[in-house]
Length: 138
Image 1 (tube, helix red, strand yellow):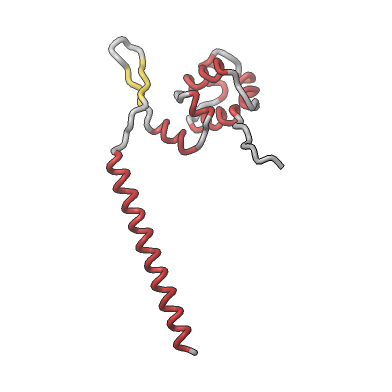
Image 2 (cartoon, rainbow, N blue to C red; image 1 turned 135 degrees about the vertical axis):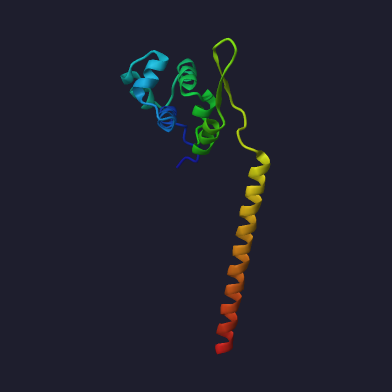
């Protein structure tokens, strides 16, 4: 039995990202100048050549590295933090800037942890009271 990590299925990653972007195979095919059948074949492939992957990544609006190292969390972060800005020449510029306040996220995390600690303490108090009750019965 091998413990080597299983290689990532690039085609499946492309499919999932395309679905998350609410894009049909036909739309992706048109964006990269190919057919829907070709996209279907690509999405069924474990690997995709770099040139094709870069064109697909551009059409999906994500870096090729996101497709290669796909994870749901990473994709949601990229999609949520991507803004398309039209510059003064009329062309679009994609910015992967931060669209949330990191301080707010930090405070939110601290609040969640405090609530978790409070619940854990309450559970321990209840457990201690239950054990004391059992000891009193003996």
